[in-house]
Length: 232
Picture (tube, rainbow, N blue to C red):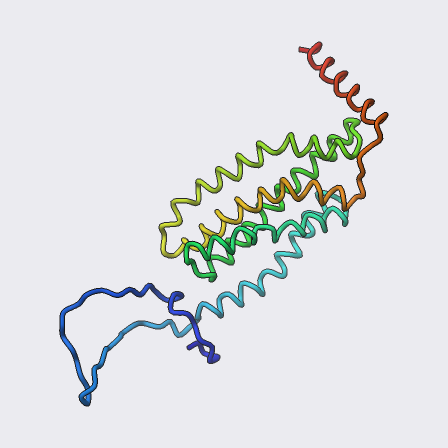
């Protein structure tokens, strides 16, 4: 029990398992008795630490919003970037349940880091879309080309992060955070590559161009490739 009377899961304090022991039965007043000894930190309990972390998130979220606004210089794009932060939960929840990991303080820290990873990938794609638009592509093909251009770098970066967190899964203390980042990065990256282009098109009302515009776009691509080959 915590100080405020709430029940705290035993997994937050240690690991319990059943083992064979010597056949010694202790009795008190003719009743079997088992004595359990443990040390309890009276200063701060895990639920209280989680509450303190959630309070500290408010200024961090505000600082993140300011940084994104200064980078993209658009409130609508900033809102879209923030909406992609929770996508990692689609992979975090099944991973924690599958490997029987607690959702405690370390898992919350992993979620914070995961949100930053996913928003960074979103910013990379949106910036590539703007570069394609500045290069002369129409909005529809700019979105498609940006997704194709950034798919491999984003996947390789996510794969490197997943492989780096695998050794931490064997840690008793950092295991839940590692599983959170592994599951969230894998599922979140896949959802961003599939979900973000559609969200961007709906968000900014981008529609496929007409046939004539498509032909002009193809001509511009061929001319661009030809100029690049001539330059080489």
